Length: 217
Image (cartoon, rainbow, N blue to C red):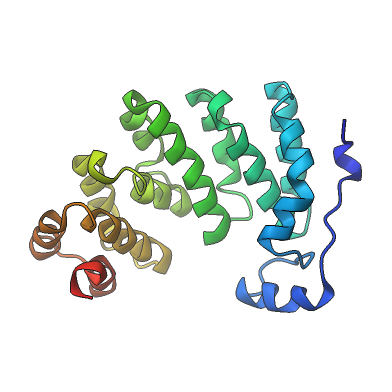
């Protein structure tokens, strides 16, 4: 079994600066790009499927505390690989990582995990939505807005509308981007609803423009 405390990613020095710049220099990087990161961590993540749930959480928590950003990515990859083993309550516990070292890259990667959960357990979609809805943390609310990105025609428009209307005047780029993104995604299956919604609701211009990109292209 791999000793997590000895697990190290090996990066390329010239990758570090461009990767840090892309993330607005918020975090240091090892300098390992996504495909190579997944290759280097493959054995560890495969092994994690044999961990107890407690060991899984402790390992993800350990990786999340490491300084370089790629270790948070490995932690999220590990959680995604084990999502079918996790209950609603366990995923509530994992949501603390959404609020730690928060930026769009990790938040959206975590959102995918919650999206996979509601796809597997659709009867708990509303329950999951309300866990994030109106949360005091902006990044948690971003998840409530984008939670159904993979739902296509199964999107619950009532929940989508609630999330958007709660934050429609929030002057925060990543919230407005999420509103536009969620509507644009839904417009791929129900453009008429999105056109009507953006016409009737007083959305901020940026969110409305983002929402209609698919329709207006």
